[in-house]
Image (cartoon, rainbow, N blue to C red; front, side):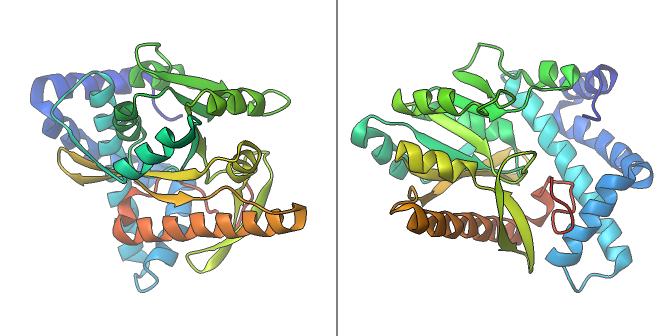
Length: 291
């Protein structure tokens, strides 16, 4: 939401002239600006690092926050590069064969549960190897500069948007897509106005939306946790190895299974930030607010 056309133009021009490394160089100045003037994400990031690195003092956490902003900037630049067809970024998929087996089993699709971590474009690019249409359940993009720069819903890829602003939150379209054998991607770390329940995460209780597991129970398909991480200058790991079965049983049993599934998702996110602490791009103090 903070991006604008002029800002994207500067980074795009730097990438074309100097390559990704030259474009990265601008980030250290831009990240410093946001560190000084953008109070809300700084406060949220400090809260996160206070839990991720409880032994870090205030000065160290400020540095952590600065490195997080730089890391997100690199992710955004890489995202643009991949959307523009830059082919020099290597993608490794962990769990690829396991997901292929599930898709071949009964002709149904499955649910991809992801979060604001890593690089969304890397994940979408890697999913193209499954040769299935990917449906993104999301709110309408309210920043035209971001949408245009990142090539969202351009029709050039097998990516469709299912908007969640209708009365049923896009559920009917998502069910149809799963029954057609397609993939449905849901963001699992922001509640917005959707139903949510508490799960333990980094030593505190956090409300996570459980719509993905409700949909999985109705469609009787598994939930595959989709995560990506930058592991090198031009290398990404896309991880689809964590598979959570659809909640089963009667109503009371299914509710309990749904809570267990939600806690499993939180545990997987904890493992992620333990390994990639500077790729957590939520920028909300999720331990203090419902959002």
